[in-house]
Amino acid sequence: MKKLISVMMILVLALGLAACGSKGDGRTFTVGFDAEFPPYGSLDEATGEYVGFDLDLAAEVCARNGWTLVKQPIDWDSKDMELSSGTIDCIWNGFTINGREDQYTWTIPYVDNSQVFVVSADSGITSKADLAGKNVGVQKDSSALAALQDEENQENLDLAASFADLIQYADYNTGFMDLEAGAIDCIAIDIGVANYQINSRDDGKYVILDDELSTEQYAVGFLKGNTELKDQVEKTLLEMVDDGTFMKIAEKYRDDGIVDQVCLGK
Picture: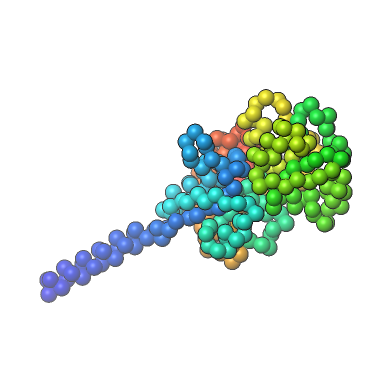
């Protein structure tokens, strides 16, 4: 009898330890992101690590839930295929809700963003009207491109029609190289990325036009219907807001304007 009781106690203990070890399900959490979209996600060439505001947030979410973070770079125009195939759990990389409300299951927004135009400081371009007859660059499948092709916004359609050409790039680094070389006259881009690109050059060569293209909000996008994982990530983000961790992470990117753009908890 004593032997039986001992065996039963060992089984109970083992099950208890297994239950403790399963907190957070011991799962991996795979974040899909554009690796050339700083300050939200990019490759630090000095360390070989992927870094950025969104990746820092994801790392903290994973740490609090006992998950293993997998940072998965993706081609931005292939993001839907990556998500639907299960290669990634979410798209977390300056991902715009507006115009995509019904395509994904979203967390609440955490950043107020705007699409802007960047030009060379000596270009003579000071407003959107000056872009008529100019070559304008934009990232493929980006919010800036969507804004310029928005059939419900006649002003933006007319603006795009006035360009000499609208050139689509796989990433904004290539676009800035063409801007520097004079191959294009302007880039339509997220303001956070614009600030990062301008600050990283620190040469006064580029300016942001006062005329905005559009305004929007960022959130984390999950496969439509994946509310369970969305709810857990959202709950954790709100906990990070309450204890000050969210803004502490944002402070690392103050020079890129992130602190002013954050809307979660404000």
